[in-house]
Image (cartoon, rainbow, N blue to C red):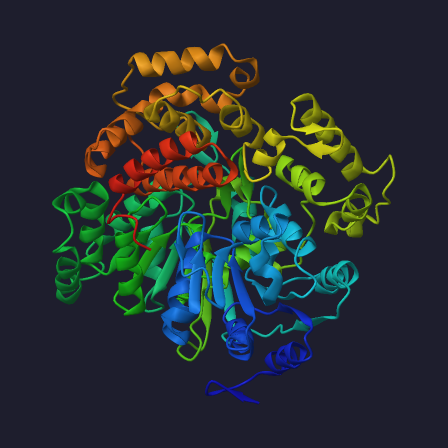
Length: 637
């Protein structure tokens, strides 16, 4: 079968046949094998038939890239984007959005979903994510009966189980399509400070030899000193197997490693890059050119080396992506988010480590994470083979664990279902008790556990406990939502605290600045290493903190305890300071500050939609405008 100038592989033909039969389709195929063509097939089939197609992605960066790709392919008038802080052409027949946005739409029964033909879930294995996996489950559970799904993932060992769950709860046919052969074979190697690029087995044998012998020393006999492997030495050994993605689980090390490599003289200065960078930055504000991040990037780029992470300004990330696509970057140090769906493969993928910090401690990657990243190696139609090379530190070498992780992706997708306050409120607000009984049995968790709905059911217990709490807090009364409950049903995080602040009289009499501080407190995720160099404590801040401490329903939440230090970046924003003046007052990276302001805009939008209070809406609009002015021209996609 020919499609878009390609002769389709068998798995692509099978998926197309399933789409023609109006089935849902679960596709398990390696990165770079052409899963995107199946999504294109759906778009071509339904774009002009009066229905809508929704393309969901797990991260905004991927949503933004797909938006650009689809606009170029199908025309700007046919494509829209919804990511919470961005809304472009929402009436388009093809809508790109984050999975969270789609989940919120189905949970609140958005009428625009009545004509959806297909929902494309890119990177469906994110259902495994401990924090966010429930979003994918709820997206499927609450989708309209008319919707069909295309679920895409590199590998889903238990794809049949997943498909059977969808088949049972949605009552339509679900086709599983598997493809196990990579279009570009992957060679997996490891790097040891002494052995160089080698195998796990050779590293294991070398460690066994060196740890059983002793080397004489001045104080007797001692074990040999173990060195950390060097990313620079690994790049040297890679030779001509470039370009290379070098994945580093730290933004700071991304930058430091890129600058360090550029200083080695391993790669000559490329005048074409320097000229292009000067051209791109010529019209940028002087403050952008003066940023430490920009200076580091220019230094590295001149040698064909770069870094890419979420703490950078969008225009700098876009510049790096443009240069990489133009084959002008030899080594790109990047964080793991770059491995999520971004369609920019390289010949070689390197790992600085196979361990990462997950918020509570360091752990090895699981097999799905490893293959997600390693799968970026090998460019279809360009490379005959791709290379994945992981640096190994002998101090934390565990042969069996590393063998399991890198051998094959055998990790099944597993339910991470949890009931949120928002879900419970929407269940009660939109469904009868009988319907709720049924819905609570529809999770992938219930299917995998074969859990019956009875008093012993874990989901049932959680539901009853949440209902009890919400009744006590005044969000539910006599089996129905109160006004406060209806408000909170349209808030998607910190529902109760947001309700206590903005669905009661708490906000009455507060100034616009105090409203800004409250919303900033709701959005801020504190990190111990973040510094704020100057705070602005005045009578408005004092009065707000006093009001918080005197309100029992509010003061117990730790969310608002950082309001005083947040004045460092909110007071100047309110008073019209430039973004770059604000940056001088914090150690937060520029991309993180933009993201914080974007989150505030998203939260303002939720509160504005949920409230009926025109005075509050007016004050929210004022705060929104202040933030938008601060990040104007920096908030480009």
